[in-house]
Length: 257
Image (cartoon, rainbow, N blue to C red; front, side, top):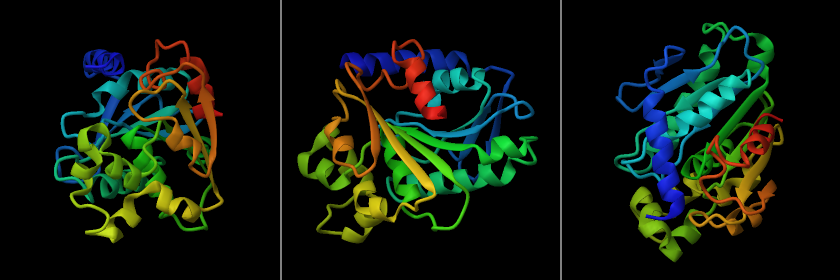
């Protein structure tokens, strides 16, 4: 296990301890046990809404627990955080379908949760690693007309075709897709952020945040993705989601700013 993997395991342990927080409310957006969002923060006083999609290279073993510490720290900044869980077993199309349904659900429910208009309109969608891939792919399916959104993928997987060709992450992307590009190109064109980058509407402001010492998702993927990015010198894959990282304050500013 790499040092980055060990730190994410530590974040999972910290996140498990936060499960009993009385200020966290769960809402189902579908019939599967994995189709729910955890809402962190006070809806009545929130200055913004952050919808966050966790990573884990699409593997069933990695749930949202490791992203709870980041959600809690963001909520302490005065925003409402909707942390999305999604189906990972069975691969595509479940994760993208679920993330799409979850974001639609959260945006529709915000008024009923008591979130003010300013916080509803100050909308940030973010995700880490595989979650960054999913929110980028989601954005590539949005219509041109609609509210403005700040999209903040953290260390995102941006090119599924290159990942499969390189056999990266022990074949995680091929397991997720279920087929190779030559067997079902249409599936890749639906789920691959790089293939859909030009389709992201202008109302979505994209900025990737990626450490240049990332040993799990190479920063080179963000460097060739056609969107603004901020590189964090010396930061690894865990640094962008670890509240105890020396980069944590900067990451929070980049997500919220």
